Image 1 (cartoon, one colour):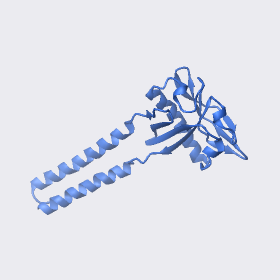
Image 2 (cartoon, rainbow, N blue to C red):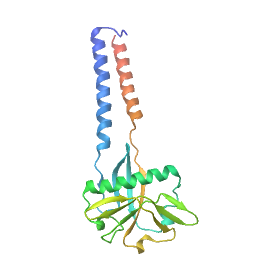
Image 3 (cartoon, rainbow, N blue to C red):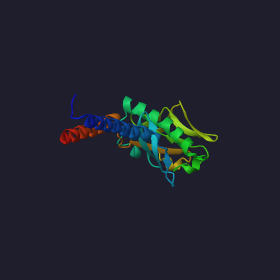
Image 4 (cartoon, rainbow, N blue to C red):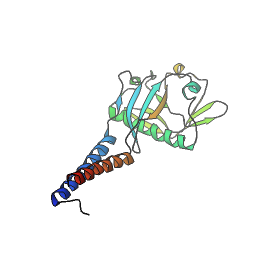
Length: 193
């Protein structure tokens, strides 16, 4: 592999190593984001699950209206259960000691309802609910089911939870970034030769 003088080869290697270092630095710092709860307790950002960051919304409402656009399949069920567990961990990291700090929870006991199954005609089930136990949030493997016509506002212990993925750089994106920087380095080295 000959790109000109020894000086150009050293410069090329420095650029490649710098690109790899930058990509590693950016990627490795991203998942360590700390969850942040909005002042009104309605949004928890930075919930981390298997390399993906989520934004979580806590709210009141009629169950079938809040979850009308959700497609309840096995992939969604697994994702909802993982997010539910991560919500409890995130609230503990943020230091939310009281259920009342979460939008929709007026009761000291609060159930964060993240339905993972839909049973016709209108029953929504959460198999891995998150709730406050003592001074910690935790998840429990138990089935809670509610009618779709149920309004969570009439239940002081129930908050409806929705989640969406944040747009994040995946490892493939970071690899492409590093390769493009290396390509720029090669082009500059060849032009200087």
